[in-house]
Length: 276
Ligand code: OGA
Ligand code: MN
Image 1 (cartoon, rainbow, N blue to C red):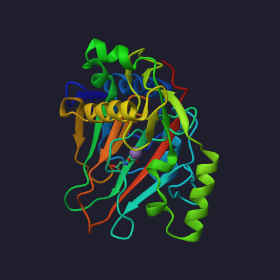
Image 2 (spheres, helix red, strand yellow; image 1 turned 60 degrees about the vertical axis):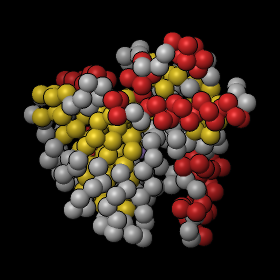
Image 3 (cartoon, rainbow, N blue to C red; image 1 turned 120 degrees about the vertical axis):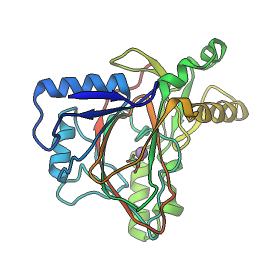
């Protein structure tokens, strides 16, 4: 396996591995270490079937089944993100995945299946590099704060409740996933590095702050994470795969390709409870 770093802060292109074949324990450990060092790994030409995709992800932990996104009938751990004029993209804002559960995902594996002729790039930001760049005073201000993360903010009825069945599924998802509190600054459980753990899509408020101040801090932190020096941008080719460390990165999918279609498959690996 070879790793080519893509930017100073984040991202590596990995070559010399076939992810369609079962991994050896040594390959799994090597990939886990590369993930922690680089925050997001990219692989080219990995035409995984949904089952191979699931089995690959399962090397790294138990898998999450998403309460809203559609999945394969026979491989429910694999989400199908099929965006087009009838189902416009909703991932064009900065977020980490599934911060609304007690133990949010440690990582996700996203496979490009059908791509528009142009556009549809995805960007990832290092929340560790963003945290490191804050001045000391700001780090002190936010170090013991707690934020609420709400599935209802990212999955609004206007987009996800268009049929009675979809509306009922959404209501059920919200009932099962009430707003979840996590530290604003969390420590990566493997590297011990700290990073920003609030995002534009899901975070509604910082509970220790008055509403105005909470909004000001969230606006600042969410804009700060997205600064270009913390970001890598990936231009997809069919069967490329991205494996991101969802603990301290955020991502943004450019929604610049309608009326063309874009289809991605995602596996979501559960992680541990965020701590300060
Ligand atoms: C995701 C997501 C980005 C993309 O799968 O969580 O945000 O590029 N997708 O489709
Ligand atoms: Mn996402």
